[in-house]
Length: 324
Ligand code: TXA
Ligand code: MG
Image 1 (tube, rainbow, N blue to C red):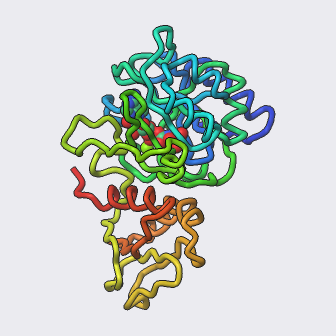
Image 2: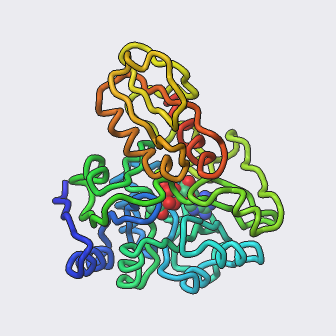
């Protein structure tokens, strides 16, 4: 057990976060998508602390975060597609998987031994501030225990990781709410590994052609976001629910009715106006609140598969998957 320091997003808070990171410790901080659990990417001892705090299976590689695209370009080999995507969407919720540069400093453990590296330039001012001060790539998986719902506030981070990490910097609730979109640019055709904060059609518009498909789930997991059960609350999850059963928690979307709503133990709406961006930003905090009601099942209304609806459905399907 360590004492987890609570840091504010002010000058002393940023300075302390950067100092802890430089000394090889783990600090959680906000990005525009979800809170990340950061460590110095070049320091294997620091990276090991992340795996330990999260209880993360070590075959899952981590994303390295940079203060600028120029800093990220030094760590990998970017083909034309990768360059196009980087200039269109960085800073922002896009992660590119690229072949590692010969002189790259993201350590083996952070890459889980792969010869590629996941890189991203976040747009959150607190994240950029910390990255500037540390001056080294910072790997940061979502700041939750492995397999659980991602954290979108400092309080969520504390719920999962208090006593297991050195500090959490509180930058309020995150904006996007689902993790970055991951595109694999290691081959001739860019492939989508994980839908996320940038809708697929926006990526395809920049590429000028459709994205390749994800490999089948039986293949070696390139991405834990691709593990079947992930992002899971304690309660069971029932998708595309049109009615509620006695004692279930209900998660609605828009003005779609759910039959038997009066039988629900608790109920929330992801976005009354049917706005998918708002729904994404509220997804993980709603799941955590409904979960804490003690309901055994969360019934979730159908969510349209357009825009960020794709990432929302992806996370919900994993939350609903058979657990090991
Ligand atoms: O929005 C986000 O991406 C957040 C914030 C904190 O930046 N981070 C995040 O990290 O979601 P994490 O560790 O929960 O998910 C990272 C994903 C994993 O699915 C991992 O397998 C994949 O990125 N990944 C990282 N490096 C990879 C590589 N070299 N090849 C394939 N997948 C990789
Ligand atoms: Mg995660």
